[in-house]
Every structure is written in C-alpha cells, then in structure tokens.
Image (cartoon, rainbow, N blue to C red; front, side, top):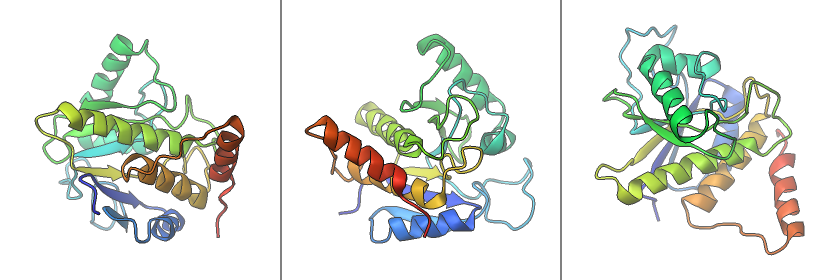
Length: 216
C-alpha cells in the first residue's frame, strides 16, 4: 500500500543515489533522483533561479545548534533565504535550550511557496566524522516522526518530503550505510513495521546491523 507521505530522495552523489535505488527498490512512495537538491538544471544554480524541485518539506541534515552556513545547509540558506536559519535558531533557543540533539527534529516554516517547510534533523552535534554511527537512521527517523506528528493535527498536512544524503558529506558516512539506515527508518516509521527490541541484546544486534552496512 502506498503511504500518504511521499518521499523524494535526491543528491548529487552518484554512489549514494545508486545505493538508495538498491535499498528502496520496491518500497512504495519513494522516488530517487540525482541532481541539485532544488534544481533540475545543469550547471551552477544561483539564488535568483527558480526552485523547480518542489515538495511540502525539505530535510536539513543540520548540526545541533541550527547554523545553516556550511555544506548543503548553506545551499538551503542561499536558495530559501536567511529567514530559515533565523527562525530555526529562535525556535531552538525558545523551546530546546539552544541545542537540538541528534535523534530529534523540528519543523520551521520557510515562507516559500515552493517548499513551505524545512525539517531540521541534526546528523551531528557539530561538524564531525559520523561514519561509524547510526546517526543517519536517528536523524531520518526523527524527521519522519516530526512530520507524522505535524500531520496528526495540522489543517494542511505535509504530503511530500525532499531529502538529501544524511551524514554523507562532512560526516563521511559511506553511501551504502546511509541508504540502509534511511530505508530502515522509512519502513519502521512510515510503513508501520517498527523493530521494537525485546532485550538489550536484540537492541545491540540491531544497532550493529545498521552500522555495518558496507558499500557494494
């Protein structure tokens, strides 16, 4: 059954896109494509160019403090405007003590019709190597849960999400590992197939399985 929430996975990295296609093969509600997160045009994209890859929300693989001036978050600021970072930082200061841990996510209105919401889902506290962690799983799970919680009460629900690789740039997570973790988060959270462990040993085995996925 196709879920109510549709997911568009998009990234410039060919290896990650291929890993997504393998992992999400046959998973309903998911589209995978390669290219600039906001544009289908070739070459350099400028802030004056229209956003032609649209969705109700885009996932920001941010740091825990809401700074959006590096990596793909800088692209978001460039294309969506500085108000996204300003609103995010204000929200974190007001409701989260200024810091959003990995495994939590918040929704911030962008003020842009093309993509009305930005989902801040930290993949790292500060820029760091997260290659041997389950941070892509934790971040994506948090983003999905934030959307589902929003949809439970919102008059205008989020029906489509746009998401780049999580932790694969500065975080250096291997593409296959990221893809595996994101697929597991999607299946468990959106497809209604939670993997609830019945012992600490089962939890540890699941954690290990998420971390050991290697590039093929």
